[in-house]
Structure formats: structure tokens, C-alpha cells
Length: 354
Image (cartoon, rainbow, N blue to C red; front, side, top):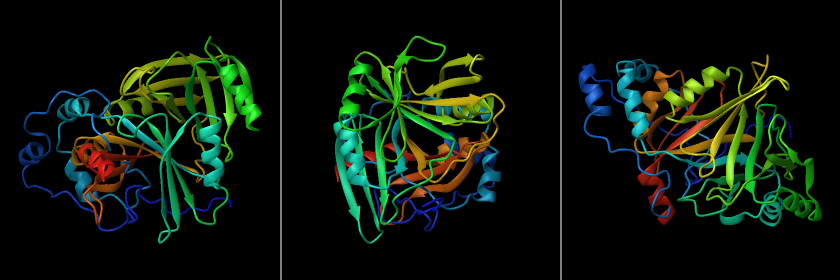
């Protein structure tokens, strides 16, 4: 069913995000606003992994930004905001996307890719089902959040989404297993173009591509989300300043006319990262309606929204608690239109305990 845009509900609630948004007050004094948002001591960034058990609160956020709040945000100094975002405790929580046959996809991920079904929840009154899968608990691992909308059997992946990356110790052996299970292999094991790493590509039942990367034991096997961008330098600057990510590495491959940049909150061999790809001369991509967004943790969704505004991000859901529950979130798009939801650290862990 091409281009059918259905609401993707918040994984921690059956309530729609489009309900009443909490707007930040516009203070009469720029000094007062800075103190309210950025004043006081901010603890140094803790390790990326959160120490307690917890639930996901990521899903598509609706609503529009407030022009008044956006204008007020500009009174916060760039240096002050940059310092705060670097100290914020952040990690990539999960990636959200839609599938047409949930049971079939779960079977492929568990039997072929070695993931575990962490939890599954059906919300019949909202006509959707969520399933969370990964290689470890949600409070310490990056996981996938699958969404099945009743009656929708297919989606358009588009040309902008690239692939997910999974680190495995033996790519050839994993490919053989996937073939034996009837999976689709789109690239046989071998060195990556322009490099030495051994990789292969496979497709899940919905056509999402997974890059298998040969790597030693790692605490984070689900290690990459690749998205294509139209201006790599602009994207790098946004994710550094607006999201507080590090540029872990950048590699240009003129022979094949593309450049990649790895962005994240820690080393690639221990953390999930965002792989941004720029193909020479391509400025725009079709994003389709299958891939939704990434969820990232934060200590303060209000400060997060202010910093994102300063760095040319579009706030699509004003920061504040979700109706009916206390989980605080904010949502935005980057300069290329890719969506991200930020979830309060404490609220996230409380939801996982419920």
C-alpha cells in the first residue's frame, strides 16, 4: 500500500502525541531564561549505559513547533548551550519502523539474526502492535521497535534510508544460516568497497537491509543505522552541536563517489552509531513511509529542544509530559528531515519498571 501514512503511536502509551503540548514560558528577562534552563551545576556525562532496568518510549511524534518559543530560544548563548549538551547523559535507545507481517518479521530476526524478543504489546483500541527485539535489555542496549498497523501489509522504504548494521564474528557462517532459513542475501561476504572489513548484506521480509559486519565480540551487536543526507558537512555540524554526538570518523571514497561519517556517543565497537552517507551530487531523497525515527535519551527534554532550535533543527513536538503519563519527550527533524525523539532518562527507566 504505497505512501499510506498511518500514525505510529508512542511505544509506552496508547495515547496520541498530538494531544495538548506543553509550551515553555517566555520570560521577560533573557538572564532569567538562561538561569531557568541552564543554570546550576550540571554533572559530568555519565557512562552511556543506564544502570537500571527500564521501557521504551519512542515513536512518531506529531504536532507543530511554537514560533514564540522558538524565538525565545535564541536568547540562550551558543557556547552555554554547547557546554550543556556535551555533559548531558545520552545514548541511542531504539530505532522505530513499520512492518507488514509482525510474526514473520519476529521469526526472521530471532532465527536468522539471533535477536531476542524482549516484549510485545497489542493495543487493539488504537489498532497497532509493537514488538521490541535486540541483543540485550532495553536499559543497556540499542534495540529495534517494530510497529504493525492493523491491515497494512506493505510500506514504501524510499531511497533515503540505507540499512541497519549488525556486528557478527563470522559473516560467512551467518550468511549460510540465513540462506538455510530461506532469507534473502543481496551481497555475498567480502571486503567492503575501498576497505578491508568483511561484510555482507541481507534483507528482512519487508525489504529492510541489514549489513553484517565481521567484528570481534561486542557489547552492542546492533551497531549502526545508516541514513543518506544531502549535505554532509551540514549534517555533521547539526549532530555535533544539536545532538551532542561525536564525529567518530569520516571516510571519502572518490572511486565510488560517496563519503560517510560515523556519529555517536562512544566508540563504534561498544556503542550503536549513526552512519551518515553522502552520495556525490545527490541533494534530496525520498524518505518513504516505512522508517520512522531513532529515540535518544536525555536528562532534560526542555534544554534539548532549545539547543536543537539553535542549530536549525525543527521541533515537531514541544517538550513536555505525554498526556496520561509522566514521560517527558520532545521530537524534532534534522536539516534533511530525519526524525528523532528525545526521552527523559528517569522517565524512561520508570516505564521499564512498570
